Each structure stands twice: as structure tokens, then as C-alpha cells.
Image (tube, one colour):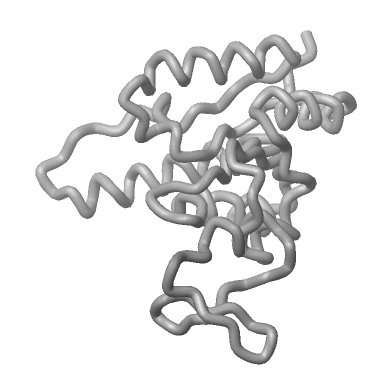
Length: 174
């Protein structure tokens, strides 16, 4: 029997109040495209009094899932600010370093500049600065250039990203 290609599902969905329902929906989308989903919260992590040790176990378990995956589908929608979830950024970088293709999606199609500009933004010599006088990256991309250029494409929905991932992995079998 030929096994399905495995896809690691990265993103801030693990923090949602409706995480159980969201995970079920995301996994179903993957299965409908012939992919075997690897959801971070499916890892078996024992609760420990030492939170730092527990956090390290979670990170290592997620890294192991990324290693087992054939590809990653990552949500890069803004999370607690104009940028994506930093844990997801870490997982994307980890996957890219391992040579895994990453298919990203976002619910917010605006550029990083559009999401970051606030009332305190100022322009000087063609560069836009935020209220803290830090330059706002402006490459017309939806996320920091290190993420936006490392992924295969940024799609407008989970379903589009999963479909592209499935098409790409069509020939990948374990």
C-alpha cells in the first residue's frame, strides 16, 4: 500500500478558542486532497511543573513532525499585530532549512506596509517609518521578505494552499 504524503500544518490556529473544531476542519481539507495531516497538537506531551521544560518538549516534538513531513502548509495571517505568529515563522525557516516546500496562506491580503502603517507613520527620503521611527519594510509583500520569498506562494485561503501542496506532492510517496 502506498502511503499518503504527509503535510505539517503550521500556524496560530493552535491558539484558537475553537481549536478542536478548527483542527478537524483543517485535517479534513488535507484528507480531501489525499494528504495525511500532521497537526502540532496531536503530539503527546506530558504536563510538567517546569513550564520551560514542557515548552522545550513541545518545540522538539513539532520539529520532529516537520522532519517527517513532505511539505508544510502555514497560515501567515497577522497574529497579535501586523506580522505573522513568530512560532510559525520559526517552523517555516526550519522546514526551508530541511529542504521542505512550504505553502503559505493568509486571511489578510494587504501588504506588510499597509498593515503596519499607523497614525504615527512618517516618510523620509522615500522610506516609511512607524511611530517608533523604525523603517517599515516595503517590498510590496504580505509579510517580511525572509518569509514571503521562502515559501512557494502565499495563497488567499487554506483550501488553495492545500490544493497547491497536494498538486506539488502528487508524485511524492513514502
